[in-house]
Image 1: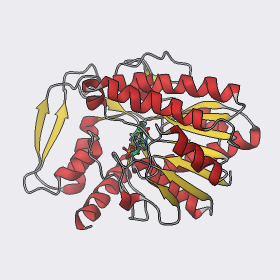
Image 2: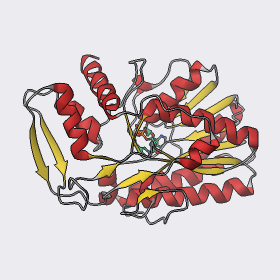
Image 3: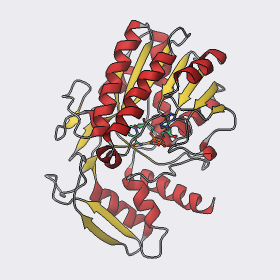
Length: 325
Ligand SMILES: NC(=O)c1ccc[n+]([C@@H]2O[C@H](COP(=O)([O-])OP(=O)(O)OC[C@H]3O[C@@H](n4cnc5c(N)ncnc54)[C@H](O)[C@@H]3O)[C@@H](O)[C@H]2O)c1
C-alpha cells in the first residue's frame, strides 16, 4: 500500500478518497478521462493522467512506471437513467473498462484491488440486504456493476490479487475541508435539492409517490462520502495485511425515505418550497438498506456523519460554496 492508482480520482467519491490518502502521505496516481470528472477536483499532490481505462497500453505503462501495488477502481458511468437509454455505452465503460483495467494489471506488482460496486446489484424489494442476498439487478447500471464484480473475482483469483468489492449505498455530502464535493448532478436526490435551494423559486421534485413504503416514496441508505472514504482506506489495509478478498456492503444500515430527506431540507432552510410529484423513473428501486454487520466485523469503523441533519447540512454547505467558486 505505497503507490496507489485511483481510477476515477477526478470524480466525486474518488477525489474524497484521494484527499484522505494524500493526508496519509501515500503516493497517488490518478487515471481519469474527465468524462464526468473535473480537473478542479484533482488533488495537486497527486500525479494525474487524463486517460481512458479502456486504453490497456497506456494504463499498463502508468502501472509499470509508478510501480503501482494497489488499485482503487472507481472509473465508470453511474446514472441509472442514462444507463437505461444507452445500455451499450454503459456496458462498454463499466464492463469492458474493468476488463481492460484488469488486463493492464497483468505482469505487474499489483497486490490489492478495490472496486466501487453498488447496492443496485441486489434484487429490488428485499429491504435489508446482506452480501449473500439475492443478486438480481433491476437497472442496466446494476447489471454492468455485477458483471464487473464477476470479472474482478475471477481475474484476481487467477492472478493472486487481493480484492475488495465495496457495494456502496447512496453516497452524499462533501469533505469537511470545503475544497471538494459533488459537482455533477446526474439524478442525485441530495444534489438536486441542494441545487434547487439556490434558485429564486425552488421546486423539489419527487419521482414517484405510489411506492409500497410507509410514506409512499422510495427508501435508501445514505452514507456520507467522507465516512465512505475512510472505509476504503481501512478495507485496503485489511485485505493487504490479511492477504484476503472480501465483498462488503457500505452503508449505515438505516433506511431514509425521500420525503424524510425533503422535510429535513425544508426544516434547515425555513423557506417555502414547491413540491412537484412526477412519475417513477425506470430502473429506480423501491427500498434498499445495507446490512453492514460484515463491514463492521472486518474493520474498526465509527461513522462520524451518520445523521440525516448532518448529511443535509454538509450537502447544503458545499452547494453554497460551489456557487461562489
Ligand atoms: N455516487 C454514488 O452514490 C455511488 C453509489 C454506488 C456506486 N458508485 C460508484 O462509485 C464510482 C464513482 O462514482 P462517483 O459518484 O464519484 O461518480 P463520478 O462520475 O463523479 O466519478 C466517476 C469518475 O470516473 C471517470 N471515468 C468514467 N469513465 C472513465 C473511463 N472510461 N476512463 C477513465 N475515467 C473514467 C469520470 O470522469 C469521473 O471522474 C462509480 O464507479 C459508481 O458507479 C457511486
